Length: 102
Length: 130
Image 1 (cartoon, rainbow over the protein chains, first blue to last red):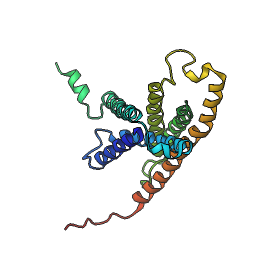
Image 2: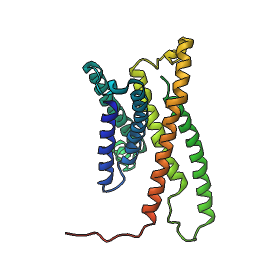
Image 3: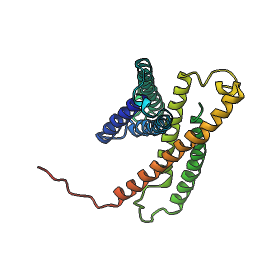
Image 4: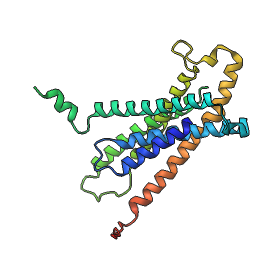
């Protein structure tokens, strides 16, 4: 579930990156971050599948819910990291302009 | 248990290499002022893509480990370090899952770089308007 949610986040971020008008939002970083995490969770899933076999596809509802919560939290954390970096690097100069306004 | 440490270590090395490469490219650009513009993607930019993937993945994976109580805020920071049997299992996981994560991420990055080079070098196509 965590893998699935992260993959959806990666695809959404990539589509948003492709449709961008300019690179002000630095969406590429978000794409690479989510794709990196997706690849790593994919490897984790493969090893889990080797260990659990068919049971991997029939998780308990409680585990699935916990994984979904984790997946959403991971997406939120990724967005926060990206946003903090965006505000610090301030490619558009919006933060600087706001701070200099009297 | 601590598979993200392998990718974090690789991220650290790649970041150092990327910074050195970027410095070298800037020096070369200064020496080649007025020369013909290079149309390929610089290596430092490609390495930056890999660092984003590795750091991003490692940080988000670390969060998962915190979620599952495998990373704790007190020394030695990894709950598996408290028991020798768990430590052995953790090291085995790092050597298998962690190394596979690092290899697959690097492999996919290499494919992305190859495809990016092909896209940059191919001639611009006219858009079909229906």
